Picture (cartoon, rainbow, N blue to C red):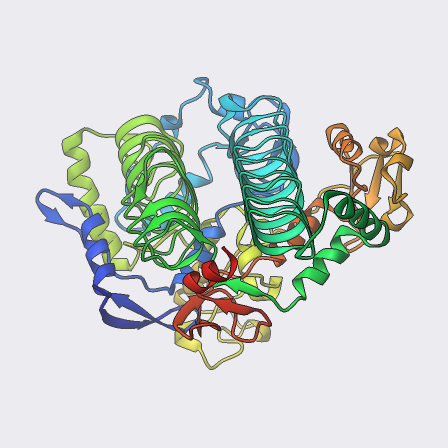
Length: 601
């Protein structure tokens, strides 16, 4: 049955209206915890889905890495926390060790104070790990973050089970791939996006089962295709024209001698072509984009093997399905009945409002950086623990008496059911993943997002006039804004810096000395270096040295993806109503799934 709207609310941040349905209320009630036979209901959200996601993503830094020293050993390390943040940061090897105990930082609850403030104080006290990695599974892969099970990898994020991969986000179960975004079960890919089971491809998008395809998109089980789109089971096609193998080889060589891959890709993207309403495979009754084996899911993106979930993003599939999750950003395998979480790892269930909770955890509330815990509230970095509050051990009976009191206290002050305020994040808005999906300037980020009590005023707290705000107003301002980092890493120490336009275009003309140089990005002028493993890849595959900084290359790939937003349109073939991430003013002809398959397959 279709969902029934039972309430329309106004987001307290952006003032947009959003609906609460009967299915939403059913979920909130289902995951609400019970103590002593009484259920403590999670209230419906006060923020719209976008603002909720924006708040969560402000707690996740994937790509902004720094050099600093371990606060325990003094050992130099790579860290997602810049050297100026007021937190204690440990090297992963020491952090995961038994040489210290998070219980030594335990606190008792103060019912006269905000629970968020108390967790924030604990957050600033308990040591944090420098990188979000499954350290014991990493082999020669120090420069990666939010990842596990990597061997000989460099600068991967949100990635697992990879070998010899460099510069990528969402690279999973892959080998020898460089500069990619959201690729799975593939080998030897370069500058590819949203591809499954592909090998030896370059600049390929939204494709599956392809071999030696270049500068193409929406291909299925194709080989030797160049500049093509919407093909299935084809070989030796050039710009959707069938050729003999010899013709194909000769003409591709001529084109590549005249134009760069980037220029050809731009030409392809500007072509008026048919696209399908969404990138989905083996789905049923689901809305969103980039979904694989999803059933009865709504407004979900980049998810694999999930059902009965809503407003979820970036899930990696496991052997069994993840189900009944709402408002989860970045999660791994077998996550069930969780609400409002960011970075939820393997086999986690019934966890509410958590950040970075690891394997085999369940029934946890407002915890950060914990592993294998159950029945814990407001804890920071506990392992193999149960019945703890603020890093203090309690008996089962004590825990089940105290937690309801904490929840009732949070209900009174409006904190229960809300995710952590953005100002509790240890990352600046410009360091965190949030800026990729919700770009803001510093001025927009550090001042309140629209405050409901002062919508009409451009300077609601008279900050520009030098008038101190009232305490109550300052408290609201504190929790309603984002942080911003002003730290700048020192430039790399190199023999020389060479402008990108001075690099030889032919990889055979690049000397070994380039490993001692820095290249000045042609867009941002930010210097970057080439590593040995990377240079070997370019030489082997006859690719030119990149002219752009890895961060800019990542942004370039992200810009080619549609936004995580659904538009109401009609199929340009059968005129059936559809939801798609292609905005109505786009040039492409958008077909529903049925019409697209008839047209292409």
